[in-house]
Length: 353
Image (cartoon, rainbow, N blue to C red; front, side):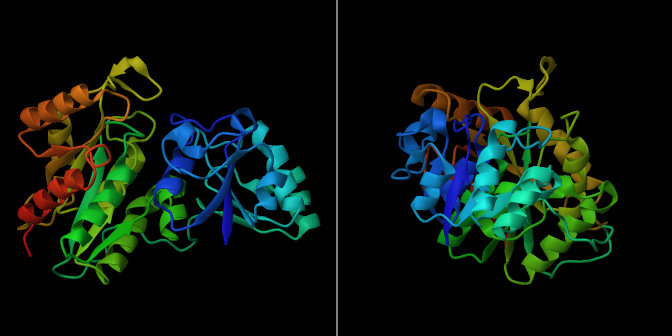
């Protein structure tokens, strides 16, 4: 299966979150990125990953390179399909390509796209479509001995999925059986399975998380759950809390983007808290779900995203985060495996076998 990524006019670090995640982690053959405004460039020149993947101007060019799947590579707040994407989607569906959509708006809800899919006999995979029979949380216990890690954030879009995947890789390097639980559309595209919890009816978010964690715990000793949103984000906190209580983590890793000072979408109107405050907030909220007699769920490490700062400032930020919280801190991308290994070591020491 060969995949093209649609990111028309948006193939940049700030807007192509799904594309970047897939290019970095997915075991897929990506043959092109479609963005006419950056055509002729290499993907890595645009977003820092995907070296050797060309950016082309049209869906037809991508399909000429063998693409049979077109993945929508952006994830804007509100989840509407951008108008600039609709001609490319229609062309792909007309030609029989499968479309993978991680946005909230369903592709076939657009009559023009539905007609194109019918003409081309094309299929659509809705990555955010939740199962129909989800349970309410709090009724299922995971396998004894399995340890659950949840990445939590100071804000939305600070690198929780990236940290989760890097932690899984680090645990596996240490000889541990570890599984990644995808809770968002990009994670699902990478892992091939999961439930996008922000598309689940609120009463069933905890149940969806509990279901995935318990299933993963049958296959692994470490279950690393991809966090969503932030408890202090006005728009996303409900999803964050449902996921926190459904996952019922033993330990948490706090994720934060260096030099971000205001809540995403609110800026100066709502400044971020200190890292120390976030540790307290998440530990307090996790305790509401912790069974009596169990050790408290603790934040045991900080994963930083320092992509947009200099090497010297990144080092200073990592050191400052560790000093403020008293916890190991690392940037698992900038520092490479050694950064994620430090976080994994902190997890193993916090919850020994």
